[in-house]
Structures are given as structure tokens and as C-alpha cells.
Amino acid sequence: KMHLKEGEKVRIDIKVPAFAEDEQNFVPVDYVANFVVAVLEREALEGQIYHVTNSEPPTLGDLQKVFMSLIPFEGISFLGDQDATVDNKAEALFMTNMKAYAPYLKSRVIFDKTNAKKVEQLTGVVCPKLNHVLLKRLFLHAYQANFGKRRHEVSESPSSVDQKTVG
Image 1 (cartoon, rainbow, N blue to C red):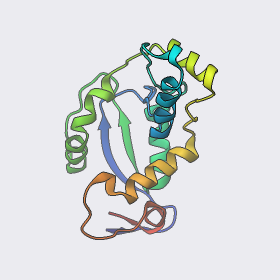
Image 2: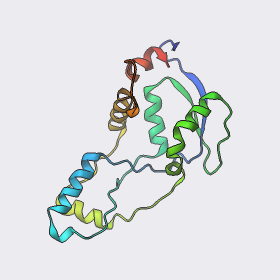
Image 3: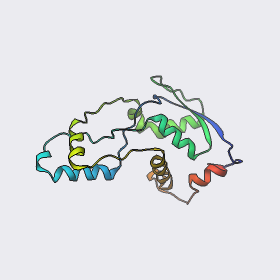
Image 4: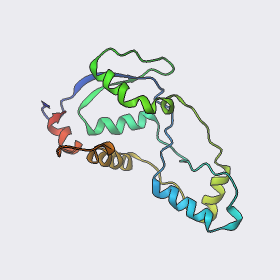
């Protein structure tokens, strides 16, 4: 761990093979569950294909801003269509951990939300806007849950990390 003064940041260069403006179609699980129940409760809605997506998904740039507000480091850059070359240990670790997500970062899928919009209008079940506050809560929860991995010891939360240490 590195001890930093308040407001101090560490530069760790990490290149991401994606576009900052690319949307990331995050949807809260409770929205998906409520959507499915709303469809199942209305026989007339059954038998259709529904792309349960976010009408206003955050971009990778949005996610980067939220992430960077929580931890005291800088240096993430987006490469667009270029493939990333690994130039340091931090990039190697990042690329290893992001391997499963790489296809999502590069895909530019456009979903047909026509049927889903009808359900939203009929039922009032809509995806919440994933603004800075909600995204920050999601990141903090993921951190506190160790991103779903087993934890051997309790560590500090990003809210305390951003004031004093980087691990």
C-alpha cells in the first residue's frame, strides 16, 4: 500500500481496447425481475421477444469518471479499435482480469427495444437511470463484496482508500 497525501494521485498507465463513448448496457437485477413478472402477469404480453435493456446506458467514459472519483489513480486511456499492447505489470493484471469481458468492451450491439418500451409504458416498470450516484454505489458494493471473490481478510473500502492509500 502506498500512503498518499489528500488530493494526491498515482499514475498507472492502462490502455483499454475500446471507445470511451461506447455504451455499457447495465441493468439492475431488480428491474429485470420486475420486468419479467410484469410480462408474465399479462397474458397478452407473453410469447414476444424482449430486449430488457437500459434506455440510457452509461458509457465507458462515464464508468471511468465514477471509478476515478473513488480511487486516487489516473492513467486510463481508451484505444478505440486498436489492440492493446501490454507495457507494464498493471496492464498485464488488468488484461488478465478483463479477458472474460473483452468481447463486451468491443461489441457495439444495438438492441431493438420496441417490445420492451410497450411493456414499460403499459406497466410503469422502467430501468432506473444509472447516474453518477447510483454507479458509485454499485462500484462500492462490488468492492466491498470483493467483486464476488472469496476474501481472506477484510480490507478498507474505497471511501477510505481515496483519502490515504492505494493497494
